[in-house]
Length: 264
Image (tube, helix red, strand yellow):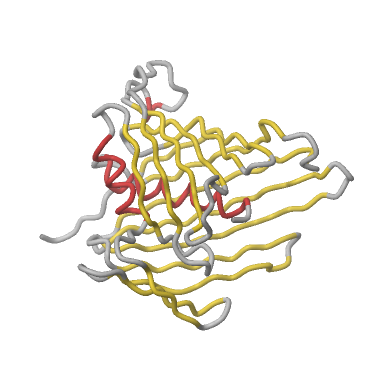
């Protein structure tokens, strides 16, 4: 999993969490990125950038528009800019999912992933890719999409420490689903001095997610994400662990949107 994907997974997950956590949850969030640490010999000098997530609710589902920009400097002096744009839509019943991903390295397109997926009520499902090449992929029984995964996580927050494991398909690459292990900790005391008005006084929990490839027998996750998840679905104090180095994502701007006026 390339490190641009971890940022995308994070924002897709956060947008999905917001879909279930509160009534007034559509939002636009800006995160600043800075390298926290690097393992000796990793070859990475600095990582800086930003992520923007614009999550919106529609009458038939939820949409997320995400953009991340990473400026990476290596110890040998090479500088690389990686830009990722992701648009997803998930139906309210968790059965349908659409995804469109474009990644650029130094202004040249390096990856494109586009397609849709559908889950069956009893068995698995199928993902159909139009890009990077036409193909289809079976999804194993028990697979869920990001919003459904976040609903399961939110069902256990507040009930004490919990450990969950699910097969999740996000469509961010054409490699299929991932096994996601999630650990939810005890509630964090409300932050009365939060720098974002929408977060003041809200309940929150530490959440850690680890991502494993399916069918490779790996006992170590490819990457991990840690965050503080607020009850309105917004995440802050994030740490993205890429193995060789870690990046901190800090929430610097938050705009709360409005729900649509849908008929009953």
